[in-house]
Image (tube, rainbow, N blue to C red; front, side, top):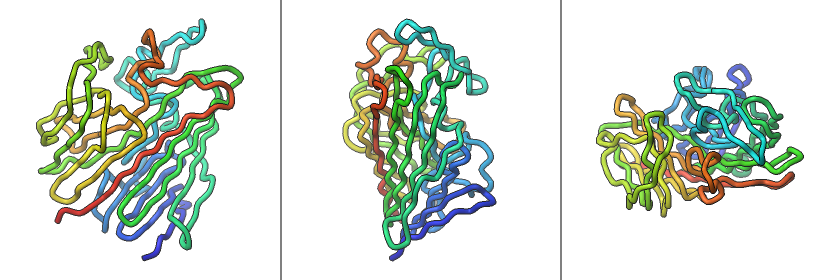
Length: 296
């Protein structure tokens, strides 16, 4: 069984193959995953990379240097008021960081003699999307039955700065899609999707069609398990928080490992909610794995 990889210049795409799995990336379109297939069947919500024209249609995108929403894009940092560009149409808040709206560079790759892997890098300079310099790096490793992703961010500014990270994968909602997650609590939301209070919730174990979430979950313990008539997926991460998004009118749902609670930067104790302060030169790192098994 061989691993192969290659680039596709006309689509500005990069592909990895291992066994029955094929992973397509778009470094130029937010460092996104365009698709992940098993024998041609989508494991994530997938498009051919040449057809992907917006990050919002991707199979997954990186969350860096923060996850989810920042209240109206405003926060204060060490006495400095900051206003972020509102980067998500229809929302009054800034969302998901800047990594998914930036061009990433292919740093290195290996194969076919070694593991199928590729690293992408982003060098961000302070702007209205994020007012602090940073470098980010993604590493993707594809095996015959698994995908591993690593994400790191390094503070390259001259001052201490806040950072968070995560992933935003989209899963196909099939007739028998079911989600099992163990956790300790769920954030209730206001009308604009900002968290208001943490309430106990020991977990989620239900058919996805019956769920209606756009919520953050604390105390994620153990893997998230996703099963349908085609695949049994096991999602693990070094991170202990999730955002679960199950829009009832869409043919997809999201289970997102994240490092911090939504809008943590505007809370009295952001570090208690997972936001990290990096001194110049310091880094923050996380990993996520998706194990894939067929059920048919």
